[in-house]
Every structure is written in structure tokens, then in C-alpha cells.
Image (cartoon, rainbow, N blue to C red):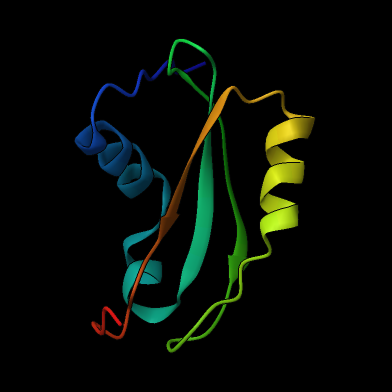
Length: 87
């Protein structure tokens, strides 16, 4: 499999951008997580929450459940704004 180490924010951005289809970035709001080991290598990727163009609801308990089940040492959460509104 592919081994990706996250050393800076741009590494995470590039990884996520490659995994999420471009058409989804502008049509649907989503919230996801990257799972990392102690060496900051990506061990998992999940987009457990999606919504419409104006919003998405993310459940913190589910985020931590995913991280714990997969034995993640760290997580990076990500979220898009297809409407262009950042508030």
C-alpha cells in the first residue's frame, strides 16, 4: 500500500485532495478524518459525515470511536465549504 507521512499541513491537504473527488468539493459539504500513527504516517482515511451545500453535522463521539477502533495515535480533521462562505 501507499505510505504517506504528514510533516506539514500541505502534506495533509495534498493527501485529502487526491482522495476526495473534485466534483464533491464544490457540491457537497463533508467532514472527515485522517488517522495517523506515532510517526505521523497515514494509517486510515474516513469521511463519516456529509451534508448538503449549506451544512454538515459531525458527531465528536463517532470521530473518537473511529480513531480508537483503528488505534490512531493522532488524527487530523478536515472540512470543506462548497458555498464559499467560511462562517
